Length: 420
Image 1 (tube, rainbow, N blue to C red):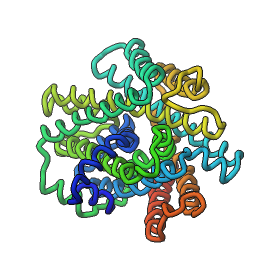
Image 2 (image 1 turned 90 degrees about the vertical axis):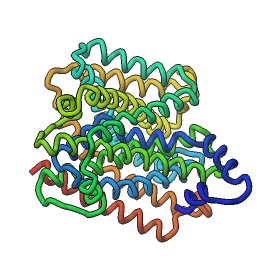
Image 3 (image 1 turned 120 degrees about the vertical axis):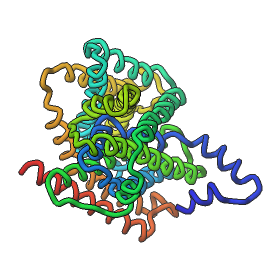
Image 4 (image 1 turned 180 degrees about the vertical axis):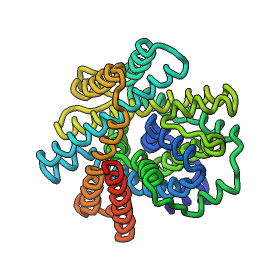
């Protein structure tokens, strides 16, 4: 990551100011994509990890940070260098049939994540005893309006503001007063329990961070923003900051649950239960911070994942796909976004909706398709004709293969334990 070191430490006259201006012009896609990883499903997963296993999984989160950067950086580099989205490149290199197959499976997996995020909005309504029938449609309509009516810069600024609101979880972490020695030990010393619950939760940490939608979004959003090769270093810094920020927030969610719920032996199944459980331990402020953070996470996740899904499908179809375009200019793009949000809103009103099964099924799909997507990205990014001097080095390829093998091993373990 020499480009990050150079960005912050170079002593060339005026270099820092020039690079900062260039970075601010580029910043957005990496930070937004990284932050959206902490959606409603992510918040629930991190809460359960902290509540059930204390600080033991912090080292896994740090490991995931490196894995996430490696995969997101490749997506950003492909988009910036080629000026094309991942769906475009897969269609051109591997053919329409393979592209359609991969994107349809990805869209199904994405849809279940969008549903989980809309369900997260409904959960916030439950926390405050507000009727879902009014609260959920109002929030989703607001999100739809922001995406449809706003231009690219406005939508990006709304998403970036949403990323800042994740400070709610950091405040919660400080209020909780964690056990610092245990936190440091859990962060630096790998600890494993070879039982179903531990391995399932550990794999869920990976699955909620490394996602199919993230690979499509990061690449297409850089393309949509019009970032050129001359700004590739700034794009990498943006990705780096996004990855560090998202897992920094996740870190504080885990320690918040560990410092309060784990030490009291309180077990939870969802982020909503975590919000309820925090109130008697830390006071009403903690519950409200957690609930507002959950609402923010759910809306950001729903918005980003629907856009990622629309990018993927329209790229394969070869139609217009720009957040900056009007509905008349990109009807299919915006219709896909509207369809996903509308159907998910209707589904959350179904009594006893099997969310656990839906989330498990989406993880299964993610497990199946993501290694294939990674291999496709590797083939594309090692194509010298396509990438020129920006192709992967041998060392980088080794890191990517280690990431792929580790992901398959952990996800495969989770699936085996789930369906036993």
